[in-house]
Length: 212
Image 1 (cartoon, rainbow, N blue to C red):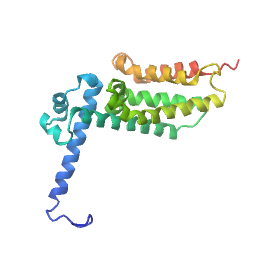
Image 2: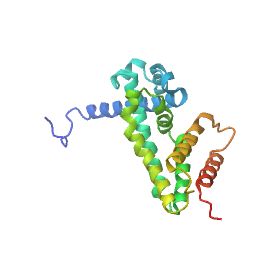
Image 3: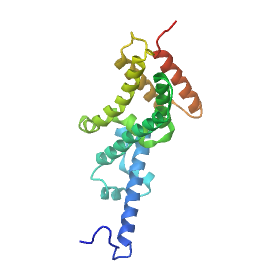
Image 4: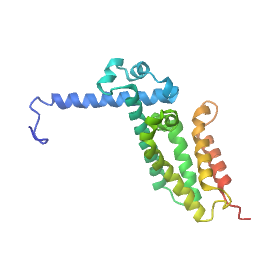
């Protein structure tokens, strides 16, 4: 066996082919996310994915054994990306717990609506997956929701959230409303900034404690 550090004896041909294969695989996964966002789990066909990825449909089976395996890969990438983007925004955020919640709302909507087909596909598609598939992504879902639970818990502990609200129910209502924007938002009829500002006001004002 040639050690990993040893130079390739084929002039780099194998490594070049490997890099090209990896790029093609990534392109197929990106294309799957693109189709999932627009057609959902049931409407995603490999022929459509192949057209977006600019490959022949049978070539997809070189990388994935089935349509569902490809969809699972796109969803897994999306869940990880959604979490990373929100965590990145929060890491750079200062201010009160409610202000950090405001930042999370902006990051979530920006990710869902414009930043990433993967994240949007994951957030929108997970509820549509068969239970056997969804179960494999449940921990990633929980990890993401746990970020939001922490934000709400911090705001509650600081006395910034109405103590009469059930925090768990409130959080699910908030996330449900945010996720639903992907179903109706049309960028030609309203700016992303306007959607984010409205959502932040509704979420923060709706949760805030009355200090009067």
